[in-house]
Amino acid sequence: MGIDSMLSVFDISGSGLSAERIRMNVIANNIANANATETPEGGPYRREQVEFSSVLNKTMMSGSVSGLERLGGVKVQRVVKSTEPFNQVYIPGHPKADAKGFVNMPNVSVMMEMVDLVTATRSYEANLAVVNSSKDMSNRALSIIGK
Image (cartoon, rainbow, N blue to C red; front, side):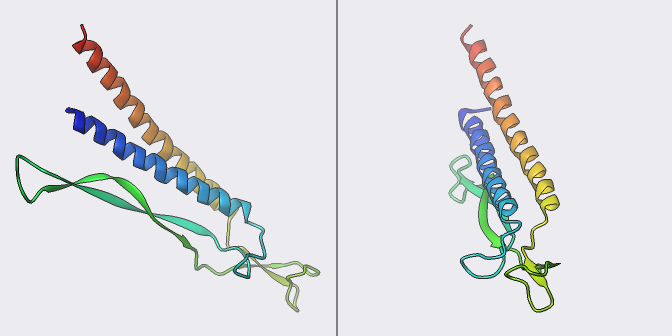
């Protein structure tokens, strides 16, 4: 495994760490706004989700002009707002209640957000384990060379 291969492992895992951190921030924002009935845009808060996309790197193979595409990690493509309908909750007397006493509440399920948070945390931990394993392998290789 060459130096460039070792560095690409760190780049790929680093991109995964960064993407999952953004995902965890979006999830935390969803949970924080789970009861927000008014936003600056008007209306209740809409759940947000992160879309990931693969990153491809062009590499040169044996002087080839065309190059070869290799996976280079992941990036956050965009953060999108959910189009699911708002939750209708019967809360008569609420300032945002309609004539029948129903309030449009955010389309956020705290339970689903917690499942997503656990998934994002596990993915973050897996990327961190790859970084630590690669670092340990590099240190062992350097210690063998140094003897």
